[in-house]
Image (cartoon, rainbow over all chains, first blue to last red; front, top):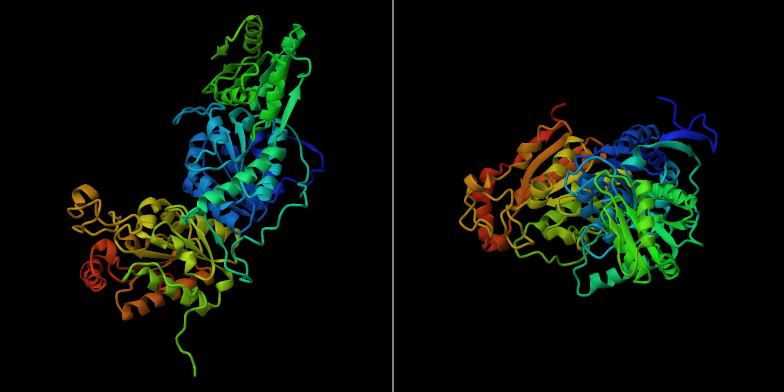
Length: 372
Length: 248
């Protein structure tokens, strides 16, 4: 057998890694016991990485017959209490949505990755953020939510993968890492670290299947046909979602305090926005950045606070106004919310963003500047 | 006094809600009797599919998970691979196994997954009210083929055992019926073989059970049994289709 990836590597040692592989390595470190995947570009490096690493660790890797099968294998593995994950890109995530809805209904911890590409339909294989609605609105049928992390570099893809497993276990909820073809395939230096178990994660023994029957047999299901039974269950889920909104919102702010206009952008778009802000600041324009790290729960409280202080916000995204809707909802009319959107492989250009900022600052009244 | 016939421990003392003359009750009981006989109730996980047996958890006295329509073999794969010490029973109907879940069925069999599949074939969709199943016979009427199944338009009924038996991952494959005490006992024998195969890690073990659905066939229970014998057993031949032990 070949040498294990970690062998010979000291702690906190820097390695150069692709985003997709960093996600895989983080999952291995976090104790993922079962990976189930199906080929799709641009996430293939992750499946390939797991096919080697999981077997190296004596764990389970299956290249399933479909994305549908993969998520249902996750459903089974999660039900017996082991950490499990799947990964795909938009078209495959669409197929997984049925299963994710069942996972949410049955309250199982499953981690999944969407390395976003251009859509709709088969679309293309270029980087995109066009699955924002699909990611943040549950995506499948029924009244449910999933936690969505949106990393913006290789290190964050590694770190938030580990955190995702913890949150999936803590809340018994599907957790998604929403990344894209650029972040998944780019190489950056990565500081490896051991997975740290927070220690306060709830035990799975009370609900997982296959243990000695010391109590009533356990039933894991998402079907609740009794009168009022499903509504009661969904209210319970809602309570959990409210706790998540309360505790798990994550975002990063850059130069917001003195800003006249604040850009809202996540993932790859946020990297471009950062450069745009530097360019604008160098030209004497006071621009700030709010970068949502959780797309759900969305940092709506903070956006509302900022909207009260500035006249303008600008959503920069690699989709045509999907996140913009959330920014507008959060701002709730307190300021103008403009849009800079690219799609289907188009990546925002920092100079174009700065130009739009200038246009916005010289515009008047209620005019909303949409640039796409 | 010695009690020689009791409710299996692996059955809950509940009256099933299945229609009069339905085969699911017998199939459930056979599954449970064998769980007791092998003494594996503490590590058995049953899968309740979408269909009439979706509430199998109400009758089986062991852990049960309800799977999405057709996805039971994938869920079973995840459970068995995640906890290899568990004993997984993948219980499915004809629509679930041979229509919406065909891909999952074929690939689980092909990987030789170590679980037992119990395939209840009653040639109709029961829970949704009697639509045409992949196993509905030519000429048989249903809600969605009211003039009878016309193979020119709807294709022929699928013989699942014949379709799957040659996959190398299949360790055991047989078709039984619950139309008579004799066939019930034979079916139990097939199931027993499937259980012992899986317990010994020999691979995918599959028992089809031809079963009556009087309600959706629009027949009395007795007439349904007669129809099953005269029609279904003509097309779905009973017997063993694959036995890795017999092949040596």
